[in-house]
Amino acid sequence: MTAPQPERLAAEACAPRIAVLIPCFNEEAAIGKVVADFRAALPGAAIYVYDNNSTDGTAAAARAAGAVVRYEALQGKGHVVRRMFADIEADIYVLVDGDDTYEAAAAPRMIRLLRDQGLDMVNGARSGGEAAYRLGHRFGNRVLTGLVAAVFGNRVRDLLSGYRVFSRRFVKSFPALAGGFETETEFTVHALELGMPIAEVPTAYKPRPPGSASKLNTIRDGMRILRTILVLVKEERPLPLFGLAALALLVAGLGLFVPVLLTYLETGLVPRLPTAVLSLGLVLLSFLSLACGLILDTVTRGRKEAKRIAYLAVPGPLALGQTLPVSPR
Image (cartoon, rainbow, N blue to C red):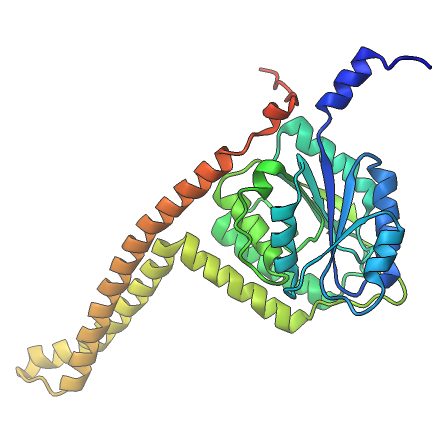
């Protein structure tokens, strides 16, 4: 038998550990093909399927296809993601839905981009697939993506994609607070707020196979995602939010006070005492709102510094023996 070449042994020693993470709920019709496709696309990767209280044969189908099957009892994609990120040890993580709508063949290209450029997240932006991507979902995605872009930065055009590649540094510093589909919003805002190096590549989006049904409710889950964005704005951008509220209260208060002031200047009387009191109350509330914004902004800065320190505590790409391209001068 021929002895392994030293170069090959060195390359294998430096090769990153890749984990494919697949959250699943009642995907018996699709999960076997998803596991098989990712085994073919990433032969050296470990594939984990987390069954989220499925009532069909999802776990058995995933196990038969060669995946490691584990379970999460708390219902919701966000809970599954939190469990996977806590449990799995790897250098590169591929997160994909188990409904066979995403292109497994794109995974090596996304991983290569992550490694070559030393990125923390590569987002698989869905392209094509009009038959699979319902009009309501497309419209909601555009609205929510535009809202996040306006507040946190325009670096991602598919906020709700379920196909992403992460560095270990991202995964082990991600708070994972969401319980449902809003976890994708948390991914994006976490990366944007810490100024992480990220990229986005177009990936094909396919219709679900027969027997597989979407778990996403356009109205209900859209409202949950919108609520998550508003909460994140409050937590990450408190000064602009409370400052805007303070300005609105101040304008309303002064608007009510002007007629009272004009009447006083003309007659020397204050005929609208309740209006004057209400005006004064609105002005006082505006200053209180501004004070809250200033205080919360200081707290937010401290939280961001703590998250940044936690992020930097995890070894980056260079610690894995990867090399980054040198930009020409």
